[in-house]
Image (cartoon, rainbow, N blue to C red):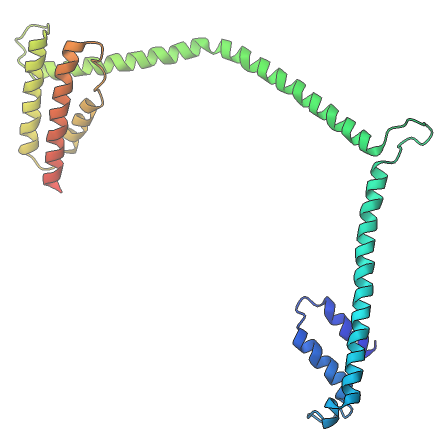
Length: 242
């Protein structure tokens, strides 16, 4: 391999260094005495610099040639691929199908097949929805039971906070009195104990039931006021314990 070929090979190095490249060219031209480690004065003579310029021009010419060759080869391959895509698959037929038309046809069939499968899946989902109506009703009934249980627990909490000798019927006034007694009882427990997680959990449960008397307007008004006072008592208690 000649010195010029060695210099050209540097172009294909991922770690190509332009400064090292120029240094190698200068070294090739000026190193007439390999035993000497110093650069002779003749390295900067007119003839040496002229030779260096000619070598660089020669390498640039090589670079342009290889670049054009690579570019043209890549472009030609792409043009050939496009031509092949439009070639007639069956050359024996005048009105044959091109490769591009063939691939479009295959793709179209795949789309139609997918649409058919989607329609079948949607049909199965509709049938499944009909079969699940009973399950949905059961879920709703379980939710109703849960809500009714919460309502019952409210009355049980109120009932347990008052005298067991009272009648088992509630007027709005009795309901208000029961709520007042319950609030007073909770307040006393908050004031007389350290942080009581169980009591706080019970308070949170009451606060979560704020919508259970929405359609019992007279009871709902009293209950909303009770919850507001209860929430305030909870905040005061927590602030003291911080």
